[in-house]
Structures are given as structure tokens and as C-alpha cells.
Image (cartoon, rainbow, N blue to C red):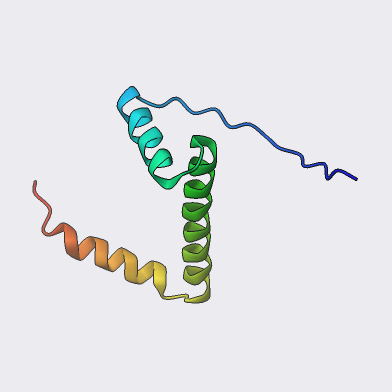
Length: 78
């Protein structure tokens, strides 16, 4: 019996030079462009979700990030 998998479609406009780079990377990885893009997007999505969940567990994280950002900006110019 065949397994039925529901899929969706995501359409993305990509500059020509980016398309060439993505095709080259997919070929070097030995995979299709669709598979390459899906794996890269899922990897980044999982990283973002994990980072967000870690931030929620540590209540001081948003304040630390804000303080770090402000300290890196230096004095304001008027």
C-alpha cells in the first residue's frame, strides 16, 4: 500500500546570481535544488526555534541582548 504524503509549495523570487550559486551548491552536495533548499531552510528553522526556546528558558536573555546591543552601538551622535 502506498503512503500518501501531503506537500505544499513555497514560491521564492531569487536573483539570477543567487540561483546559479544555489544550483552549484546543490550539485556539489549531490542532491536536487529542491532537496538542497529544503534541507538548508529546515536546518536554519530548527536553529531559530531552538534559540528562541533557549531565550524563553532564561528570563535574563532579552535584557542581556539589549544591553549588549546598546554597548556595541557606542555613544549617540546628535
